[in-house]
Length: 445
Ligand SMILES: CC(C)(COP(=O)(O)OP(=O)(O)OC[C@H]1O[C@@H](n2cnc3c(N)ncnc32)[C@H](O)[C@@H]1OP(=O)(O)O)[C@@H](O)C(=O)NCCC(=O)NCCS
Image (cartoon, rainbow, N blue to C red; front, side, top):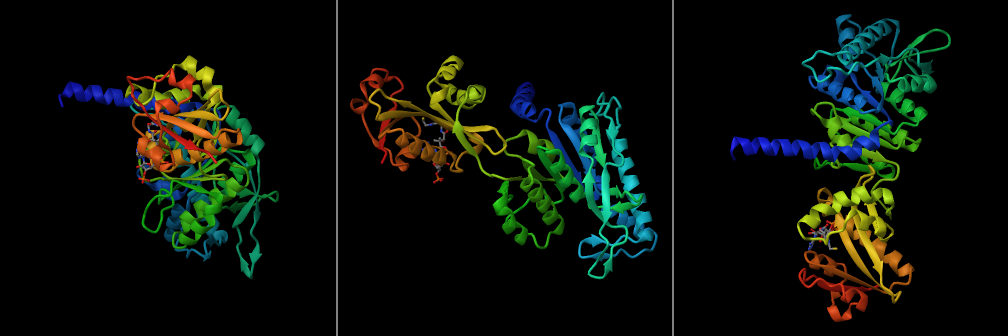
């Protein structure tokens, strides 16, 4: 390809990408996301890119609470001080000497994050971002105490999150950064688990999302296939499979608890892959695993607010001549005929319309479409099954469909060959001989 054409293609890809992201930008604006970053993520070479992406989310009006860990940094300091790390299973036992290392490591990790978020050099993607990072004594902690004879000393657990103070800082345009140390009313500092802080913060703030950066980039099947979406009832089975991956198990558990307690979505994404956060939030496909209370897609009656999404879905097919052209005005008038299918993230990924005929017992099924990124996942089959049930409940006994490209699909769904003569007169008179669509019908029982 000539360099000019290459450049033109790159520009049009860029423009398309920006346009495709606009529905997500609108959806996410003003929402609260809690991001959990372990010490491993902070130490990774990709961390600078993650910070740039966090700055971008902030510029797009998303309210962000960052919760960081510092496990590897603590380990490093313990090694340097010749103190042996002590654990009871996964929980660190923080004696006084260890607590000195914890404070040192957590303080340094916090400074590293604050410094990166303060970057403003002209040659950096953060130029002009001017982010204010706030924090403080926002977490009240209590000691784990002595359990089964083991004294955990300065290891604590979250007692309370000052969500009102966090909310005020977010409203004021700041990013809130929470470190894994909490304070008790007796004036003690406790070493806390950052995933626990992130979960409880997300729950207490009624956050839209809890996003956990993990090394694995999501939950995978034993064959290595990424599970893009999990509903809560699928999580226990996955936790069993993840027995050997404790950190992913903890991330999944955190998402589970958050969603079980009112957070709308939990995400597990990679801290190693450049752009994983943006891909997860601004594309239909995502990059990691999404955990939802009520998983899977939603099928519902279309409303006037869906017209824009419907146009985006069907226009490319109209341009290819697969569907007949419907103007915005026509869609607005006929919106009550449409049923839409929404991806669990709220994006419109499918539609179909039913036009009842005057006889009251037959109808035309039209505009059955699945978004190209979501083909062959049973979306249209589930939509059709639901529409058939609804139609039957409304007394419709026969469904007609006119199609140029999807004959076999409809036949597999029980539609049989029909003809122009069998179409009710009102539809027959509108038949477009130039399109030469094939006609099928199905009796609903
Ligand atoms: C037809 C359409 C809605 C199917 O959507 P979908 O969500 O991928 O459908 P499902 O996942 O329920 O079914 C997929 C199965 O149907 C098959 N299939 C999909 N489109 C087909 C077609 N046009 N002809 C024959 N089979 C088709 C797939 O190969 C797959 O079969 P497999 O599971 O054996 O591999 C989608 O291809 C589409 O949007 N087409 C363009 C619009 C159109 O022509 N609509 C019909 C006129 S109103």
